[in-house]
Structure formats: structure tokens, C-alpha cells
Image (cartoon, rainbow, N blue to C red):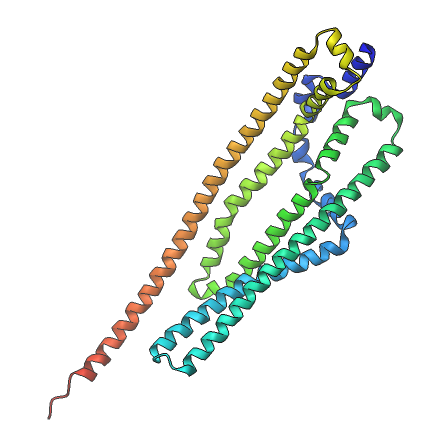
Length: 332
């Protein structure tokens, strides 16, 4: 039995120097451009029709906020006109119609959100089954020598642990980017009357957050690739401490405390590294959000200043006419 344990340790564990081996550095950045097309191809091959429906739902949801903003402007203008007209029925009727359209759009948006959530669940199940079949197909086709290399088990571990979450998370991120980008482009038509630079400023306000998310996503992927060794090591220690095959040797040689401390040491290292990444990402996102809000605040302040300036000019133009109307002419 100790011989079997040594063989399993040699297969499942790799020496710690490989974590900083030069061949492992920069691999994610080098192949980052090829990961996205391959992931999209994987999603397309596993859930083609669901993906088409999902894209259509995202396009419609991206245009609904613009319609809501446009109708809200019409509603406010109608309310002002109705108040000026004394609230007669003819002035209130258009307001009721616009309010009904806004309610219908909000109901449609909620229905599409629920439908999108169901489509995502179906995509997740199909993608997970497709990746599982690919893993089984490749495992049955590779040479027996692959089962003696730690690299094979590293990739197998990442494929198993990430099969149900990573592809669908990538699809959701791309979907959010598509939907928000479409909304931003559609809102540009409403903001152009306030100035051609205003849509560009709002687009600029989103770039810091986008760069932070992209950078930390790559760092998270790099950390996942490096931490695969330690994650498999914790699985191995857990298997030694809980399986029936090693229970007799653990009690005979009093190895329980040793493997427990080894498990906790590796888990502490993984936890500290993960929390450090989360802390750096949170601080970077906070700074990016603050910068984006500052740019948006400047744009909004400029819009308010322009409206107030227009009102002041209009009041100045109405002033002389009002005075001529109120002050009677002197007889000649």
C-alpha cells in the first residue's frame, strides 16, 4: 500500500518549482487572443439555436431602455402641457397613452429578462454536457503515456472544475457587453442635441471599468492555471484522509495529523492568494467607478448649465416684449 500511495503522489503532485518555471510564465497573455474564439466556437457547437435566441433577446433588451427614456421625456412634456392647459381632458389623454406604453415596455423588459434567464440555464446544461462528452472522447483516445504525466491531470482537473461555469460566465459577460453597448449607441442619438462630445464622454467613462475587468480576468485565469497544482494537492490530501484505501496506513503510521496540517497549509495559501486578488480587484474597480462617475458628473453638470443658460436667454428675450405689453403707451 505505501508503494501505491507513492505512485499516486508522483502522478497527482508536481514539485513546487514548476509553478515559477519560465515555460509557464506569460502563457495566458500569449494565447489570450485565441481563447475567446475557441470558447465562442465551443458555445456555438453545443447550443447553437439557444445562442441565437439569446442574442435576439439581448438585442431587444438593449433597445428597451432607450425607448423608456424617450417616452419618459414625452410624458414629462405632456404633463407640463397639461398643467399649462388647466388639466382639461384633451390634454390628459395623450399622457395616459404614453404612461400605458411605458408600463407595457417595463412589463416586456421583465418578461424578456425571465426568458433570458431560462435560456442561460439551458445553455449551461448543454455546454456542460458537450464539454463532458469531449472530455470522455479525448480521455479514451489519448495514449496511455498521458496518464503518467502531471500535466494531463492538471488539464483534466481544470476541464472538470470549470466545465459548468466558465463558458457560460464568458457568454454572460459578452452578452452584457453587447446589450450595454447597444444601449449606449442608441442613447447617443438622444444625447447628440446636447453636444457631439457628450456621447464620447459617456463612452470614455466606461473604459476604466472595462480595462479593470479585462485585466483582472486575465490575472484570475493566470492564477487558476498556477493554482491547479495546489488544488489537486488538496484533493489528494482529502482523499488520503477520507478514503478507505488509506485508512489503515494512516492509523498504523500515525499520519493523520501530518496530512491534516499539510492540507490546511495548502488551503491557507490558496485562500490568501484568492483574497489578495479579490482585494486588488475591488480597489481597482472602486477607482475605475470613481473616475467614471467623475466624467459622468462633469457631463451632467454641463447639460444642466446649458439648459439653465438657454432658459436665461429665453427669459431675457421675453423681458422687453413683456414690458411693452404691461406699460401703456403715452398719447402723442
